[in-house]
Image 1 (cartoon, one colour):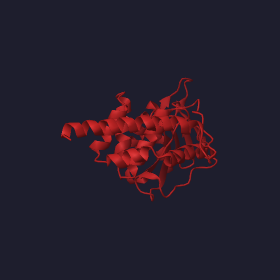
Image 2 (cartoon, rainbow, N blue to C red):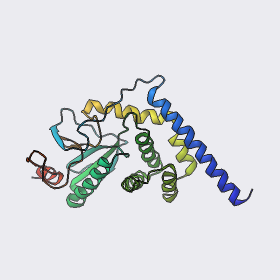
Image 3 (tube, one colour):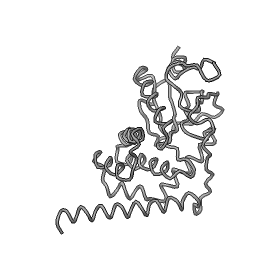
Image 4 (cartoon, rainbow, N blue to C red):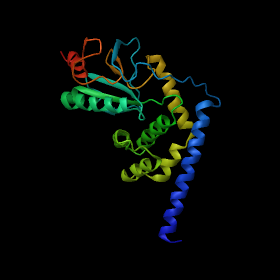
Length: 238
């Protein structure tokens, strides 16, 4: 078999695998054998800025994805949907927080797969599967870049995996793993216990913020001044 034929063969294999994966995703969304999954509706406040005092803030888990140190005095837990522009905007604002406040802030990233949105589940799986090979952060960044450019496709996802030198076979095997998909869906369902119904949702110590809160203070549509992420984080350092 020539190199060209081998390349074509691999491309066909990946295409078939992804098609099977999409079919399995459609099936898992409606039925999980042996697992009761309670899906979360996307909050009507998603994309808007609303904040409350959290009754039950999330607890840091051993397998959480963390940007920064667990010893940081301020911990931001963010549930994000990699198919949502609001989550992409929110990620930009969190980058500004980390840039300005440095080691004082740690950002804990948790994927959130929206019910009925196949892209949301696939992209959450992509971050998780890249994480198994130590590249979750780069995959997350690249997915948000592709989202902003409206270039999220099966091919762009595979190309990203190649660019990050992720083992392709292991990556595809992970993406199509029913058990791992179920875990993502269960984690999304379990987020309800922390009053998370959509993404992005942030917890900044005791504050829960629904929607992509701007970095700077701003005036909302009702003419009220709303604190931005910079102000909220600053208050915890006083």
